Length: 230
Image (cartoon, rainbow, N blue to C red; front, side):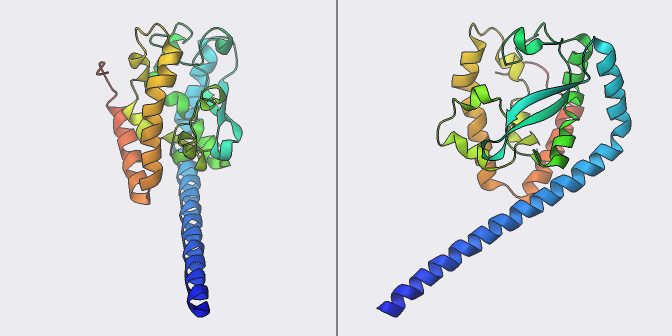
């Protein structure tokens, strides 16, 4: 009986160690994948990056980059880099959300947002290790405080530049159209749906699925969403 007990205990311990090693190996492989592809992407897209720097500077007085505070893996705060698409001090002029035809967005900013070029600086975050290429989109602290314990599981992984929730909700601003309380609608309706998609991604994530979502991202940029099917 004693041998049986220690045999079962040893087997359980071994299984736990094996699962931990597998998770570490997968996490390490994903980090290498992110770093390599983000570095290559930043180099290849450097002319486009420079173009965005110039137009972001020309749009209106103010900084080229927008540094947004976001919640990353393990609940750690980090600064997410984007090209500025709004007027200076836009955060103090309205909601944390970008609503339909938000008046804070500059004309050039609308172009950068429509083509997703404003998110190119996210590649810097990926190289630094703040973000992944594919994963849950990072949220602001003000919205993360509304997460349930189950929803907080998305904070187990690095947030992503793109991913299932981002692609499937790329018309988010239109979904907020006509809402009397857009922020409340986002917290109670849109955000839970996005988090459910993110949680499903985390449970089923693989190298192949990440490549698939990268391909879908490129297709979504080339063939942008039109219309409102909310």
